[in-house]
Length: 214
Image (tube, rainbow, N blue to C red; front, side):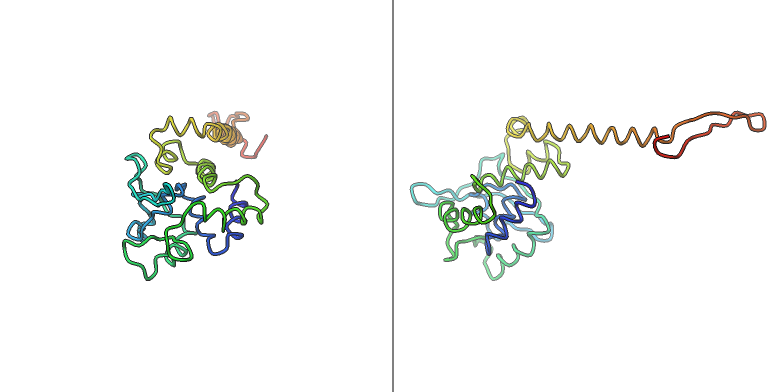
C-alpha cells in the first residue's frame, strides 16, 4: 500500500481511521496496538512504548510482554497525536488506549469483520489484512530514507538480517534510488567544470562554466 491508499482506507474506516494510521505509520502488530495502555504514550517526547501485547487464545484474550527484542520505543507521527490524545482523554494510566465500541479490548476477528474488511472493500483494496499495514509501515520507512537498523528497531525484529530477509526487495529499490542520487550529485559537481585557461597579468587563470550541461 502507498500513502494514498492508507488515507483512503483510514477514511473508509470511520471512527477507527486512527487505528489504520497507527498500524500503517508505526508498524505495530495488531496485538501490540490492542494491548497499548495510556501510560505507554509519551506525548511530550512523541513516543510510545511497546511493552505488552494482547493475544486471543481459544476465545480468551491474554496479556503478556513481547519477546525481549520486540519491546521497543516507537516514534509517534504528528498525524496521530490528536487522535491518541482523544483516545486517552478521561482514562486511567492502566486503561487500554484503543478499545471496542463497548469499551473492551479490541479483538482482531471482530475488528476485521466490523471495520477493516468493509473499509477495504469501500476503498477498492483487495486481499488486505491488518497485518499488511505492518509491511506498509516498512515500505514507508524505507521510502523516507530509513536504514535497515532503523527499520529493525521500529518493527521489533530480532536482527537486521531478519529485516533484510523479510524486506530485501524494499532495500533493493532503495539502492536504485541511491544510485540516482549519486548520479545527480555527480551531474551537479561536473556542471561547474573547467573549460579553459587564459593568461592574465602573467598568471594562468582558470575559467569555469557555471551553467548546467555545458
